[in-house]
Length: 233
Image (tube, rainbow, N blue to C red; front, side, top):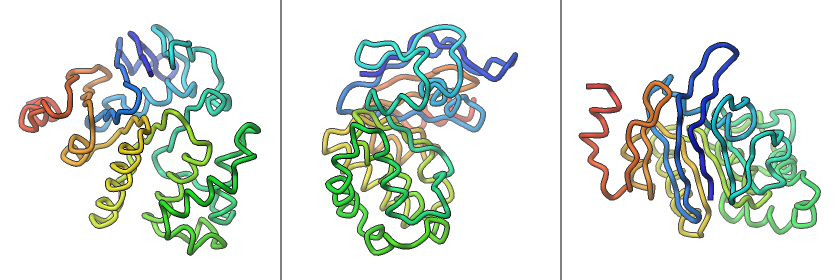
C-alpha cells in the first residue's frame, strides 16, 4: 500500500535519512522503532510532504506522493497523528473532532464519524463540550487519535502515541490500536516502547542513524537481538 524507496531527506544542508526503504502492507500494522535521533519522525514528515525528498520516492497505492502538499494528503486518504497531540486547545473536544473531517468529501459523514469516535473513546463523549486544553494527557491523546480517524483514512500514521502517558493509559492505548488493526485499518506506528510495539505489530522496522537496520515480521523478531541493535551493542 505504502512504498518508500531509497529516500533521502533532511533539514537544509543536514541530511538525516540515508536511502531508507520500507513497505507497508494493506490491513497491517507496521511499527518503526529506534532511539532518539534515528530519523523516525523525519521519515514521517517526508512521507507527509512536510519535508522535501532529495532522493528516492514515496508511493501510496502505486501513485507517487512526491510533490503532494501536506494539506492534500487527506484527499488521498492519508492521515497523521503527530507527536505531542497538537490539539486546538481553545476549541471544544467536539470542535476538534469536526476539524478532522474538514476536507469537503468527508463533511457529509461528520455525524456518523462523530458517533463512531464516541463509541471508541467514551471519555471523549463525556467531555464533548469541554475545551481540549483542559484535558489530561491521556484524554488529549485519545482526542488526537479520534480526530485523525474522522476522515476515515485508508492509512493512519501515528507518531509516539504513548509518550508521557501513565502505564494504565498506555495499556488502554494499545488495546485501541489492536482493535483498529482487527478492524482492517492500515497503520504505521512510530513507538519507543519496543515490547508493546512489537506485540501489536505485523511487521517491524528498526532505524539507526537515519538508516533501516532491521526489517522483519513481528512474529520472528527476537527482542534480545532487537535491543542489541537498538542500543548499538
